[in-house]
Length: 99
Image (cartoon, rainbow, N blue to C red):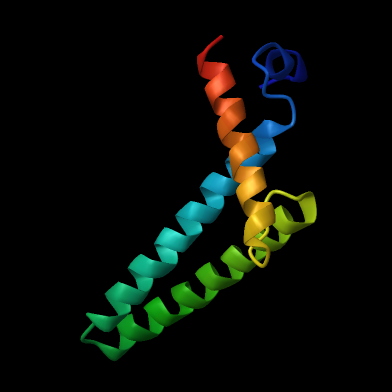
């Protein structure tokens, strides 16, 4: 989305946060699903492959988390601040739906 369209839609500056949040949620889901699959695996080869995928998924999650923390989108150690970010994001989404 171009800056012009973002400004028109009231989303200026929100696009990166939305994409990063979606990516973080997907990474968490991937970690959970991979860990579950790992516990159900019978062969050593597949187990080793899933362990490697789990390692990469955890590293990806760390990278996304670090990016979001550096941008002020994510505050995993300060729930009060995270709540404020979530409220601002929700209010922005509500305002967009009313336009």
